Image 1: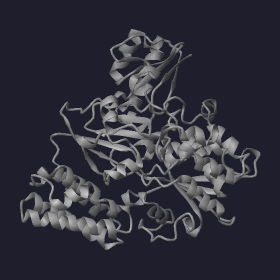
Image 2 (image 1 turned 90 degrees about the horizontal axis):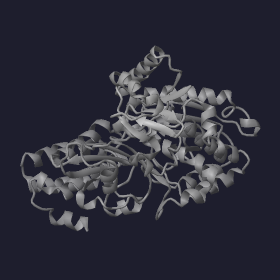
Image 3 (image 1 turned 90 degrees about the vertical axis):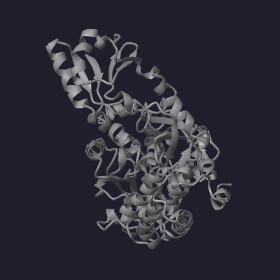
Image 4 (image 1 turned 180 degrees about the horizontal axis):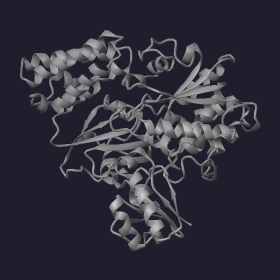
Length: 521
């Protein structure tokens, strides 16, 4: 029996993975070849999708991007024996793009069958939870704190502190909620993990439940991720049957169950309190803080809320220890982050590296530069509310504090590349327009400020009282930053002001004015 791996990841499906799998099955039947097709997750090399792998004595051999019409030729070339072909890349593990990564969170993604619990366990799955079930809850919290893990959703808040807050509250009804509303442009790490290694998320959330004393959890997934919803619901049912979820997990004193809920397409529900409102069946509008969700969260009860990547990092922390995880990274940014290369990039895909790698390294060494072959002009890191970095800032290490020093943010690790044809004034306008469309409307600076922002930028582009309107835009951005109730309005000025500071010529200004120059210093 020859194993052939064809991804079931949404990115691979979008370029014909199902058709490729069907073509391989048909050709194998014609040639009377004993082939088992495994629908794995993606390895993250999206520029090679559909990436087909064949298991050989030397290891898995990769071919891609494969289309259905290539299959007959691949069989003829002997790809089932791992023989050479123009679409061949040799051993998957030796492909430079993949080999030079540090896969901790994504250690199994693309390797295992996402819905095989035996495959998951064979590759180290549930080792962390098995340890956690024998530990005191406070010791679990201590291990997570020692690791230096910070929220991977964008805020970078220390995970251990959040968990300890819930742990220290009196026993009673508590919840664990996973924010899988991955709405940032150029990001797909959450989706890849949910579709490629769903048991990892389930394990991480269950460990959090044991640590915090919760018995019920919810995964809030954006409706635009139907494949993630389907895979996770199947994985949860499999985990229940194997007693990795449910009553007295693996014979322990701990019980925990998990449910999937889908959003309705609102970007604002990526903000934790808006997500809670939506989970409760209400309109997704932010809540005032305090109280924080760790104290009064879902249904007014203490709730541990983390992003998919945060929960998914927990199993390896418990399995190998907090110090093991802490040894990766720099400064206060510990561990690894799944950077997602998108936009005008030659080799788009996921790169898991320890903090400290630079944007330039990611773009040049992994991404291979722009797809158009033109020079890079700007890079937006951290989603639609992240700063646009000029090339002079591409050597700043990926580190929460270092990015903050240059008025930028690492965010969820999205890296969107633009070449020298981009109009940065239009990008600034897009930021304001995006905020105007996606604002929940609860606070005036965000609701009204973003609409006025679009109008002011239009006047600047149209050369109407340009200097006066640039000054007005600066003032408006300060109001939005200081007066908005959440990061939606509070961070929208970041892409706007970074465009104005870094690319003044696109706004009809030869150089930044004194206010901006002083602010940049």
